[in-house]
Figure 1 (tube, rainbow, N blue to C red):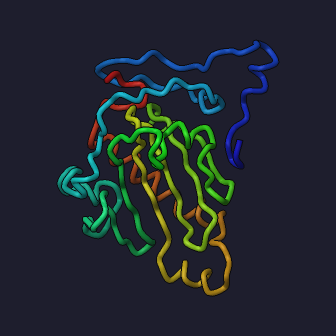
Figure 2: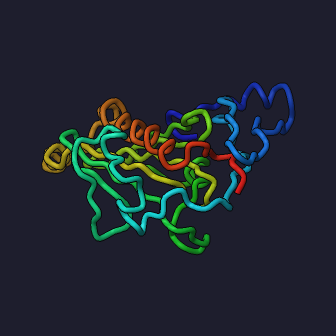
Length: 216
């Protein structure tokens, strides 16, 4: 596993050969809470047939009206030329996306690719998480001067919902001039919490009973 991922399968492997992941049954109505120990498992049975919770081709109009302050943003949301919705904040920038499902022959990544470490993030920092007790998620930092933190959330669709946070452009340009990568620890401590806060505030707004194991 990548740096920051939990390697908790060791005890399981010693006691039982091929023990199954501690996943609750898929549930209708309200998604079940997830076992925190699930972050140690590669063999999770991800739901992939739910509708997207955010149709990002609608850009900011696809999210609840006036949601910005509710997720900690102080500026107006921006609908750009590409799908998704973004913010330009004093601390940096945030973009929110969840693209339409794509078949494996496309270059688009699925949540399981992130969870199982098949997407190379560069810096080696990747941490599996249980978000809001009900969502599988992965937080990762790329290796570049831009200092971007990516929080990928499994909502039960083929494509994950992503929250991408970056520091101000002038900070990135400083490291670019020095031909250096943005310090990973700085990103983890100051930028990643912005992405996590946005996800934890927005998901209950758009699907109050949602989660990774909610039935389609």
